[in-house]
Amino acid sequence: MLIVACAILYCISVTMADPEPPHAVHVPAAISGIRPPQPLTLGQTPAENWKIFKQKWTNYAVITNLAQQTNEYQVALLLHTLGDEALKIFNGFTFETPAAERTVQQVIAKFDTFAIGQINETYERYVFNRRDQKEGENFESFHADIRTLVKTCNYCNGCVSSIVRDRLVLGIRDSNTQQALLKERDLTLDTCIDMCKAAENAAAQGKILRSETICKVSDKASAKKSHYDKLPKAKLAGSARSKSMVCKFCGFTHVMKKELCPAWGKVCNLCHQKNHFAKRCSSNKGSGKTNTGRNTRSVHQVASDSDSDEWLYSLTSNTRKGKDVKCSMLIGETKVVFQVDTGATVNILPDRFATDIKPTTKKLRMWNGTELIPQGICCISLHNPKDSKDYLVEFVVVNDSFTPLIGWETAERMELISVNDEHIERVAVVSVMDKYAEVFDGKQGTLEGPVHLSVDKSVHPVVMPSRRVKLAVRPKLKTELERLTLLSLLLL
Image 1 (tube, one colour):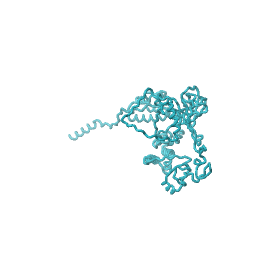
Image 2: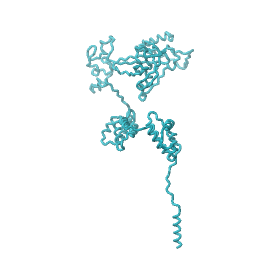
Image 3: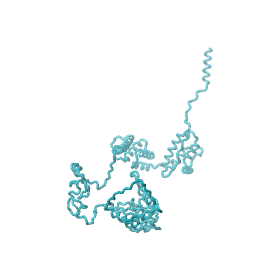
Image 4: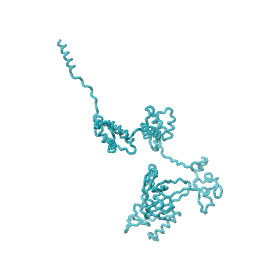
């Protein structure tokens, strides 16, 4: 009986003991030291900028366990992070709930309505279907932008993958990749993405593996086969062992065999005899005639006696009629057509458009050595009707016989032309006249006071033999020597 009583007492004590507490849910502690997003800047694309900020804020709230805080604290932190511009917009919102009961979701919903507004489904789908891969854009960027655009089109969830796949196939820039995608009968979105990535990687790796790059320049004239393409390969192989010389019948350099001469069998346009071209015709010698079949170009130079030389290259070609780059600008209410010259460093304006002309020391020197003194310079405000921008441009004023001209530097600043630096290797050019303009007087460089030249006496002097001067530069050399003699810089 004693044992039974003890057992009953033990059971009663166990039953009356405190029950085991339930398993506590682990809530991660808030993480400090995480920087909030940058203040919201709406700019020209408020919807896109707000979407990016909203995504950053959501990530920030998760990382810092912001849900543990009160609603009032969360709203205050959001408004503090939004910045001054967005805070002014928030002050104009109206809420149905008081400030103490306001939640972050309500504030975000108000900004969604303000920045994004009501989505125009038709327009969003139009923008989506017009999105193609741009030149130089990699596939990852193109794919990411397509994913972003499709979210605002309100397509059903079941057809989004097929619509994105079709946009990738139709918008891919590489025609070979596009043809390969169209050959696939059961093309899925994942397969399409893999094929596009593989094609892009293969193209990039192929450029690295190739030891040399062949750049082909197509032209209408090169579409015709040359004289050498029509010759049998056996003749070309045998002629390769011969020596090439300038041919007196055609004027080109080739192996001295009549079968290889482009003029062989042709009729001259001057004497109407066979086997030579008109430029090599004996009847053309001494007549002073020039070959009118070739392109003629006139080059004009504009020199200045100021701190820097300015050049004006006016190029005209018989085969490029109507292809000059011209633009329309407004001077006040007057519409003026300017020619954009990438070879010029000076702007030209006829005097009928100029106002408030100021004197200048600049001189316009033509290609034949003749000088033209301009009427002066003036600053004119140009209005571009295309982008509605105004520019203050300095012009050299000349008479009405000149065409209004915009030089290279001004055209680049006005964004009329651009230089693709990724395709060229720039060479820095420093003009001595620009850097040391104060020591030049327009005739010859001069330095103030006596000049001492230090000579290393340990070096033995050597007399170099005189070199012959080419016939083409002898008149120019003679003129320069006479000029130096008149300036007493050379003694004969």
